[in-house]
Length: 252
Image (cartoon, rainbow, N blue to C red; front, side, top):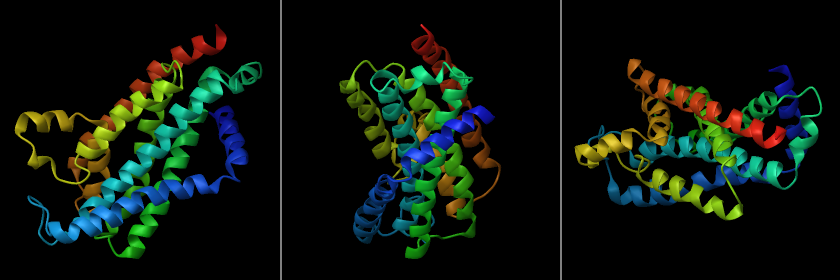
């Protein structure tokens, strides 16, 4: 793992001058929060099936925080690793050093996790300043966002090994955008008929949102454990898929 951290250090040195990218990752969910959470929320009022004391912006903010962690981590490993692997050939030199393919995979995952956590932390600070932090338990969103970042960074790593050309990036958005819209980001799962609820509850973003929304609303307990287990298993499975494929791509 110590060698993998060298890759994180390398990325920090490269990206230290591109802070605007991280700022954009905070700005995007903030715009959604202000336009939908606050703007549309003024028309929605209380959320059906949710404590009427919880405002719509308070309900939406943790979900957008989970989305920020997902996008930050997923984009870094899927888009970033694809270009480093296929075009820049960054890793071709690395594998001639003591760095192994496993070190590269873990390093890129750790870097994406860190980047997603920083973006989420920035958004969390903005949420607190705007007064949408309902409970002090919202601080659990920081480690929660790190877990979300791990799961989606690993997923992005696996996806990147299947990409054939830049046109395939549209396929990623074909999955990510509907998941963002329908995985309870803007409304509770109870609005769906029961068969559709099962489908939504199988989505990784649903569990990411649950893991951050429940503590943010003051609900902490064993009910969070299934989401923790799901995201850990999802990330581990993605890494298990990515490692052999990345090894074949670099050492073939």
